[in-house]
Image (cartoon, rainbow, N blue to C red; front, side, top):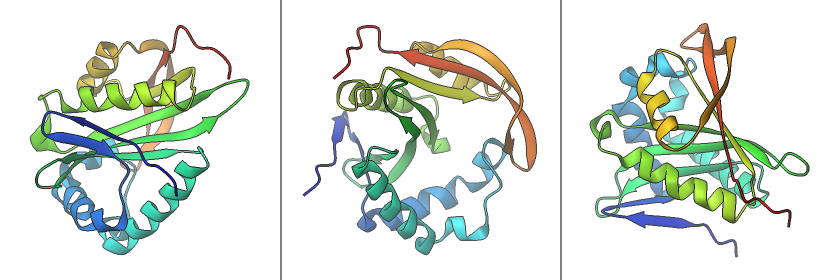
Amino acid sequence: MQHYPQFAFDHYVVRTAGLEDVPAIVDMTVRNRDILAPLEPVRQESYYSAEHWMVVLTQARSAFNDRRSALFWLFDRDSQRALGKIGISNVVGDPFHAAFLGYSLSQEQWGQGLMRRSLEVTIQFLFDEWNLHRLMANYMPENERSGRLLRRLGFTVEGYARDYLRINGEWRDHVLTSLHKPDWQAR
């Protein structure tokens, strides 16, 4: 049986999600639909349905098992209310040992340090357990909150990409950043 990591701190837990978490995830996506729309790709109506998230979570478990990607969720430990998500995509092994990092947090949690702490434990796992050397995270220049968070985590700016991603229906520029594990060793 596959072991799925959990990282607990304060009253929160960061973990992969199972089908039993679908109602909490749907609730989070619906609660934050309007505030996150300017920061995300255009979402089809099905994105906000239980059926969509059952498929996503099933595929996410398979991808995690194969170390192709990971989808972690931030939950309130007591209520099991979903508060945020962290996506690790495009995991590449030798010789690159790298992946992309993305994240979002429920608006009511903004400014409380929850995403920073959640990313710290997730990044530690990826560097230690998945033996990644490099994580890349990109943000739109006007998303200053995300830029500050990445700087606090130690990410450095590597460049600027014009028309990088289609966000909210329009091609948007992004600041390209990365974080490296300084003492990385091949294993």
